Length: 166
Image (cartoon, rainbow, N blue to C red; front, side):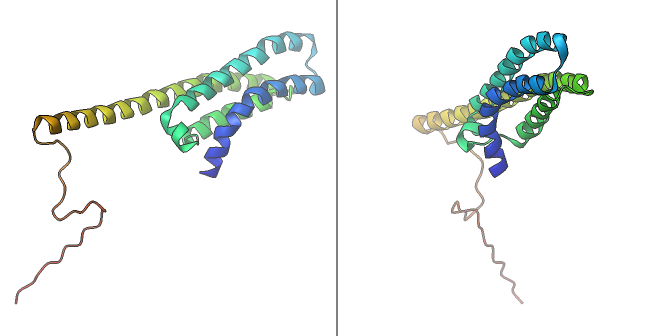
């Protein structure tokens, strides 16, 4: 849980830190004149995509209530951010890391969006079930719900003693 909470906080720092790393990496490792043009396009694009994905993760109610990213977020967003870091070294593998960063950005966006929709769907179903339960209780109809086992006091522990007659 600690790693997930750290990652939840890190993603907002990464919105500034990773595009800044691309600029610093270009200054140290140099990428030539075409690299400057690429930098002018890449830094704002990285900033915007990191910001949009961080906001999508933060919009998810379970992420806000737990103050932690999901394990799927940690895996997908972590791989994407590592690809951005690898791109910032501007070495022989910069093109590979750039392609991985683009693929990671698309994957991170769709994973964050699908988790947001799924979480919203779960919450909406729970809200509607509660609404229907309260409406049924007010109208005097039997309240729908899962059947409780006999002698269940709600704490989850049920002890059954069987009597054997000889």
